[in-house]
Length: 142
Image 1 (cartoon, rainbow, N blue to C red):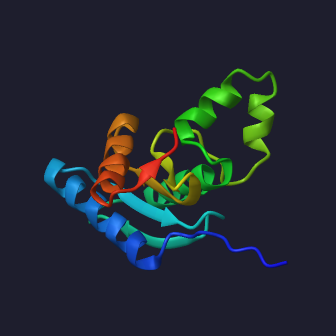
Image 2: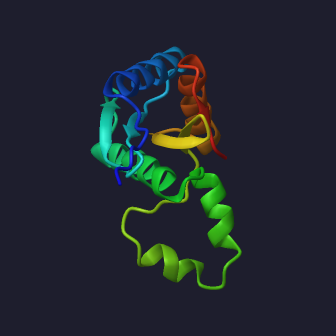
C-alpha cells in the first residue's frame, strides 16, 4: 500500500512568508517568520532586519510545535497548563514552545504545514500569522 500525504508547496510557503513580512513592515514589527511542512521541517523563513537570531529560533519552534501537535501554540499551552506534569512535559521535549504565534495550516481538513511568527507581543505574532494565511486563502487550527 502507498500512502500519499498532503504537504504545503515551497512556493506557497514562500508566499506566506512574503505576506507576513509585508504586514510586519506596515506595522513596524521586528519579527521572524517560519513556515514548515507537517513534520515541522522548515520550508521558508525570514528574519527581518535587526531581529536577533534567537527570535528566528523561537519562530521555528512555534511552527514546529504547531505542526507536530496539530494545534496552535496557544491551544497547546492551555492543554499542558492544566496538567500536573506540565513542567516535566515541556522541560523534556526539545523544541516544543507554548508562546502564541504558531498555527497549523489546514487545507481540506488536513494539516499541511505550520507557520510561526515571533518578535512582538503574542497577539501580534498571531495576527501576523493569521493575516498571511488569510491572504493565501488557507485555514488554520486553533
